[in-house]
Amino acid sequence: MPTERTRPPHDIGGIVCGLLFIGLGVWVITETAGMSRLGAVFPRSIAGALIVFSTIMVVVRLIRPRGHETPDPGSTPRRLGFIGVMTAWVLLLNVVGFFTTSLLCFLGLMLVAHHGRWTPGLAAALVLAGVVIVTAFQVLFTEALNVPLPTGLVF
Image 1 (cartoon, one colour):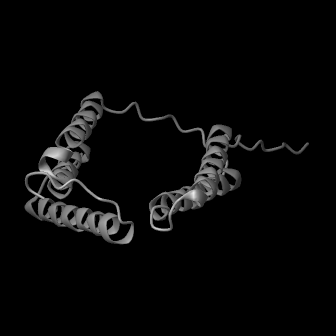
Image 2 (cartoon, one colour):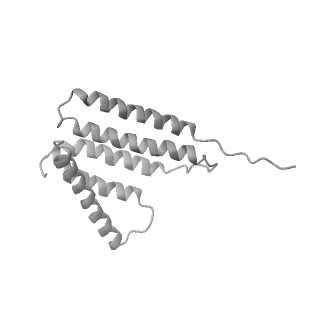
Image 3 (cartoon, rainbow, N blue to C red):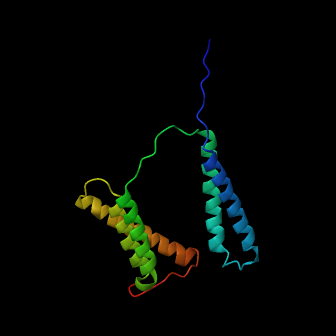
């Protein structure tokens, strides 16, 4: 007698959330119809990305069923460190400025997130990656999306 293989259930919660975010993205795009062309660039860009990535998530959740792995319990000190770094970013953003605050908090998050041994090469690579990523976001926001960023004391 052949045995039937049962497939693990799909991630229904992930699919529903993905569909809700697709709907949110569509709603945001329709709400920007009354905005100026320049003023609508940022919300439409974010809404478009939200729709694309949510669609990808829904498709992946439909194609690949959920596994039965047990979730990692996580680390409370790392979670608190993340909250502390993000709180510092919010509080210092207008005082110090976007670029400097974001770079320092990027490096702080790397300190909190890294599990392995630190080497000078790794530290240099993370600093370089931080400078490149924060600079890219600065240029994206100020030049492409025309979003004014806080300058603060430093820049």
